[in-house]
Image 1 (tube, rainbow, N blue to C red):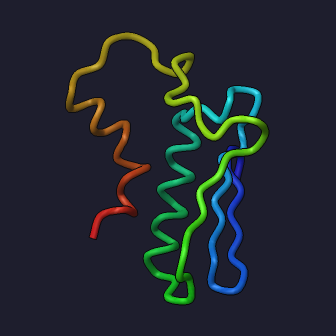
Image 2 (tube, rainbow, N blue to C red):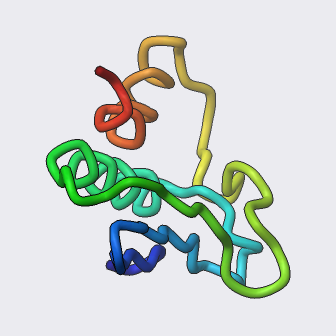
Image 3 (cartoon, rainbow, N blue to C red):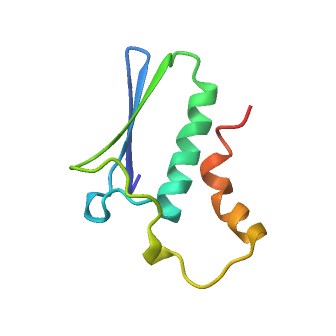
Length: 90
């Protein structure tokens, strides 16, 4: 993974946002990687807890505005966010 680290030990998963150069700002790659991990978590019955943390001095500065180019419609915004939330729905 490019922008996050993920590990499971003794039933505890740790997902670390790992893009400290941008204060762990969410971009398209990170959203997809988080979505992939969330899907794995839904399938892994050995995981009892998830710790979400950020590398460096910042947890997450929000969306990486340098990756947001131009105006987008509400439908395009939902499509853009879908990879990061697909694993969180039950």
